[in-house]
Image (tube, rainbow, N blue to C red; front, side, top):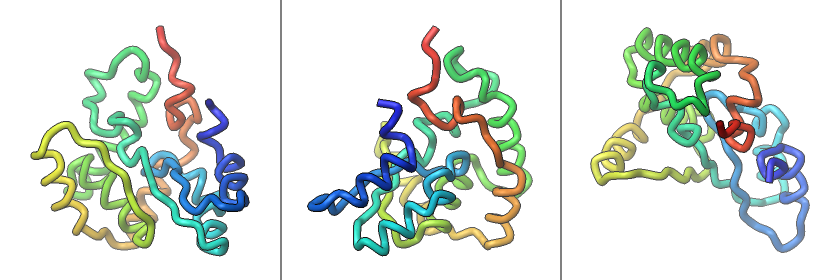
Length: 158
């Protein structure tokens, strides 16, 4: 199952005849698919991409002091992310969603919600666009994040 989270698997899917739509994870921590040219390749091959894991299965929205044991190794990077969001005057949800929307404006996004209030908040945030200078700052401050954090299939159950 780990293979489904790799740019190589996405590239293979894009090359598959008859397959028109693929899903890939993309978020403020996990930019592997963009860096590997998957979005550009999909566009060249006229394949549609749906982005998932915008909030990294909720990890980006958790309080670093309340992280479950499973994801405690992410504590320091979550703190860094939240500090950056605060410095920019944004909530973690706003920064995470606006980052994806601004970076990938032509791709579709799949979001899970637990309540209608979350859906309303996400719709409101969706209209938020952040300047390229903020994108650059985010990518400078949040880089080289361990694959054991960005890939939920590698989160160890204890």
